[in-house]
Length: 142
Image 1 (tube, rainbow, N blue to C red):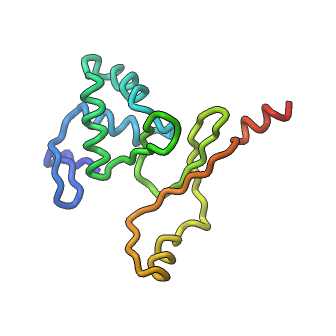
Image 2: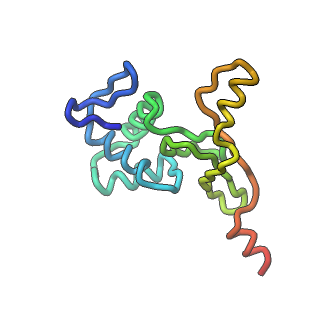
């Protein structure tokens, strides 16, 4: 997604100048499955860029969300979480507070079906299940 040859991030007509801080933040999210919060991203990125500020992390996360490189999950708990852009849905365990990625085949094609039956144009969807994850259920059985 980052076009290093031109030192810009592109999404359609939106252009954002390349920055090593933004790339480090982007890579932290792109290469993980833990749906980090701003604070977690900040602490991890500081290991590579010790002088980065929390404000810089917030600003770059907002820019990356705005141009569509990452997504913000804000309907879970009190803090926003960040995730890579790829087709998948989530389950939130209200016991351990984990967000679990779900790839459910039966939902692929759902957007096209909805568009055909409703006449609306769907750009994306978010599906969130809430409940108790497998690990927490096993703990309950003990």
